[in-house]
Image (tube, rainbow, N blue to C red):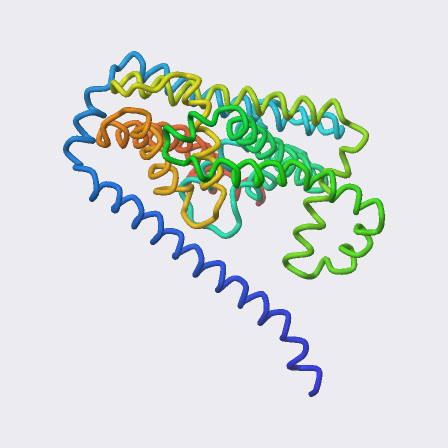
Length: 346
């Protein structure tokens, strides 16, 4: 009898974690909705819609194409990381997994996250989680490294941009945060070799320490593949160059004075706030940061908001492709197919 309550304790703990995750998902939805409504309350919706509707269609078509190219670059990065691990998924299967993960990240308030979905989708392409999970972590981390490197470069090399954005006092803190983020992996790796691995391994049941163990271990499995990691960083740089080009392109389409160099400068100032898990797909957070930066660069507020919302629509359009791929792959069999199957089984 004594064992009964103890045996049910793990189940209670799991239910509690799921409940907290579900509640946090609802909070993220509320935050996203609130931030977006606040933005549209501060800036006249009619003016924003007017600028968006007047955007040059040829430039909008090019922006959508560049948005698709950014997903392709990320999928190629993940595909290369998988191949050096000895996995052989097709590039098309990897692209599909990436699109599905992007859909989950942008549309669903899930506590699971798009990265876990990518691992699950890759498994259907023959990639075991023991290979897929480290590749997904390193793929994501390489992007974070490039963002932090760009933030450090902008903070140290473009003080004028920070002043123009009204963020002069934030320049040194941004440089310190970015520099610390870049140094941290090196420190963690050194500690890993000195015993951190065994210490964390004994605490894998902890949600915090277990997650840290998985992240550090993901990099460790690539210790003999430095060229693959360098290639991942290079492709991440291409990704953010395309993102900056898209910001400048959309700004030009609606008449906002933002050049490519300025767009590259504001990329880390928009992406770093997005990393805070307070909103679904950074909805509202991205739009607020983007609108602020574009407006400070000389655009009227409604035009700046139009740039932010058009970029969001492009993200949603690309993400919807992943949702469609996910739905089609899991389409239930038709009645006729079920009958035929039943006939064969009989």
